[in-house]
Length: 246
Ligand SMILES: [Zn+2]
Image (tube, rainbow, N blue to C red; front, top):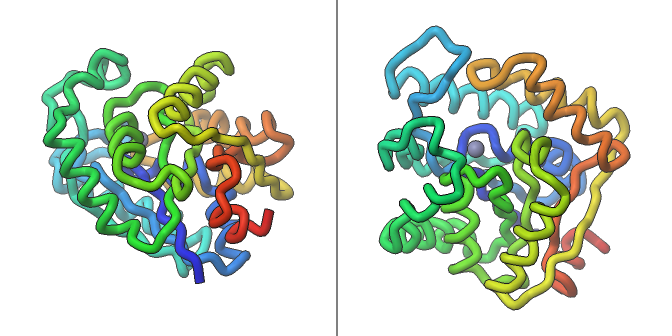
């Protein structure tokens, strides 16, 4: 059976961005694993805890509960890497500034690539586009683009960041990735009934991270695609076409 690895910078990105897709692929009996990268974190604006150990544990527990709710067969792997504020000593205000991407060293990209290659052996992979320019999302996007065969690598739209990103900026990011890999990307929309209600329910597991209003924003974005999520697949990839029966 073909395996798909979801490259998730933090303990919520796979579910916020691909919650419906994970459910649909699980129902199609695809073997899924979520690879969480920067899981050591002090970011939990809505949790009454303070230490990195407490916050990291809460965030992992939220993710485990949400993913188990979607399907109990989805595997989660945690790399236990430090997130950007802890690793790069950047203030939160600079985490999503494009110039912060320059803080990602070649050595860090090399180490991320090693993790990705180790966990994506004999697996298709789907990475964040890095919309919103969060430095951790950009690091995973750049490392995966650098080390995986472009025909096996798809991309997802980072939520909630895409909700404030223009369609023009999305196209610029797509073009930039296409130029770096030499392989075109084609959109695929996966739809399900009651997408907004489903996404609101699974986003609400992450109570340390978002308010109910923010869960509504994430969920409501599914309306842009007629009750769905949009992915970007390598054009003419036989493996992806076979796995998704396109
Ligand atoms: Zn994230």
